[in-house]
Length: 118
Image 1 (cartoon, one colour):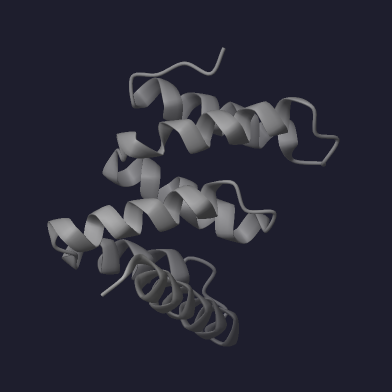
Image 2 (image 1 turned 180 degrees about the vertical axis):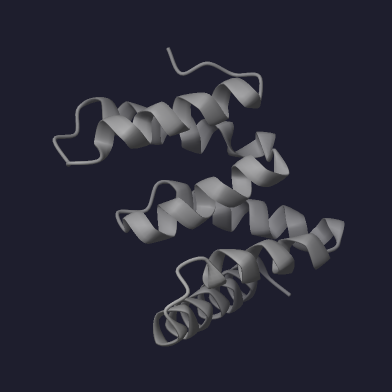
């Protein structure tokens, strides 16, 4: 499977899980499913998932970013550090309502991974 095919499948999986979560009024269902999916991946699949998660981490969609950050944090995905630093740089100058909270979260994840933003 190519990275592009894997990306499409992972995005579809996330959309379906998010849809189920909305219909069941379970806000963490999608995240739980993504966690379970990542846990079951072999090393080759995890490498591709890590690429997708890095893309999601800098997404303009805050729900996609939330899921990516949670999985990156949970599984301590150090390969995501460059994407997290890019997100932190973007959040520093953002006027979005939750930007400072999200920046604090990203900085904490970076520290937990052994990196610093600044």
